[in-house]
Image (cartoon, rainbow, N blue to C red; front, side):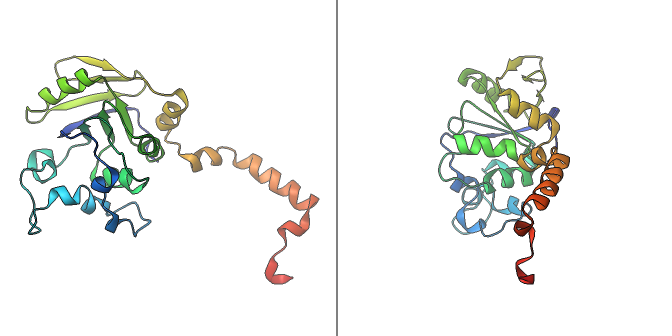
Length: 207
C-alpha cells in the first residue's frame, strides 16, 4: 500500500449528501477481485445519460477535473452496502484523499486499508472549500503528520484522526503489512509448533 504523508492535488467537487456505495461503484462491477480497471465503473450511473452517452455536467466528464486527486463531498459519504470496491474504484481513478463532514463507518475504515485518507472537516469548513473549488485549477495540500488541510490562500483547517490509523497510513501498512512486520516471530512459532505437533503439518495427500 502506498504511504500517505503530504499530498498536494487538484480538487474535484461532488456536491451531494448520502452518496452510497452503489452509486460509487454499481453492483455489476463487483464481479472482479482485481483493484485495477474499476475507474470505468466509478459513479457510472451519474456519468452516463439514459442513452449511454457521457453526461457533460458530471464532474468526471469535465476536462478540468481529469487529474483530480482530492474528492470534496458532503455528509454521510460511502453509506449503503459494505463493498471494498468503492475505495478501490476511487483509488483507481486517482483519488488519494476524500474530504467530507462525515462518512459511513465501513467505508471510512476501508479507505485506510487501501491508502486513501478520509478527512473529516466541519460543515462550514467544507462549505468554504466548495466556494474555493469553483475556481479552475483549485488545489489543496493535505498534511497527515500535521493533520491539516491548507488552501492556496493559506487558510488551514485541522482534522482529527485515530493515532493507530494515522501511523499505518503514514507507513503504508494495511492489515497484511502489519502482519508481515512480525514475519520472524510467525516463522519461529510455526517451527516450534511443527516440532510440538508434527501431525498438524503433515501433507494430507501423503496420508
